Length: 317
Image (cartoon, rainbow, N blue to C red):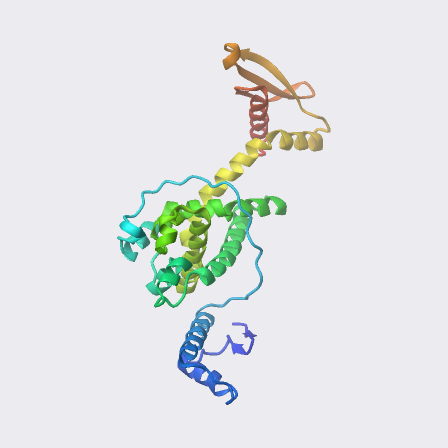
């Protein structure tokens, strides 16, 4: 195994015990530094979490691009049971069963579900979910990019980028949160809950990202992959299908000009039904030869269907 190190932490050697490492860090501080007892506890907690993470995973940190956002793909979900004020009535085990993941450290899951409004109302909460959201955003960008790269080997870089952006946008991640029950399990403050925060897209998206970040810390990338792939792959297939339909005429024209040095022509061959309910049939031809035919409630839709039929016939889709 290759030896690697970063910022003085030796990844290639056995990790020191957490208490020993903290004692070494503390011993190195100047004696003039005075910290209150509460601050000391926060420093130790932070250091312990960071070292535990470095010791259990091999990660090269870098800056990841922020995702863009658009319209979500299908959701179907029956919510969990809540009482007055948004109090969660099911257990974390219920959520994990519904979502399809299992945490070894349920404190991480609880933190991932903790909105800052809840943490503000409950001073005993050590932290809200915003740092986990940051981590989950980076994990999703990498995992979705890697998955699309392997699943669509012929797809150009620009198309891969657009598809990834469509999958990690706010609305889509919020839809995944609702689909898996994560959206229903968010721990919100009373005001945020009464104000409809549980259905707010930005809140659901952020919580889903926090769940991903927490699952990554708890069980690693394979566990995250097992959780998100069943959500992302059907949505990706739907997006690709929609894009192919919308761009069918452009794609077929590019093929015809490249392979045949000719431009397709579309001809309406029939129009049936009353004026307010006409149904059109259009053929696409190249140099007089019919390559495809399609029908639709308008000539434009029928022409797109004809182009898609032509692309299927030539094996382009």
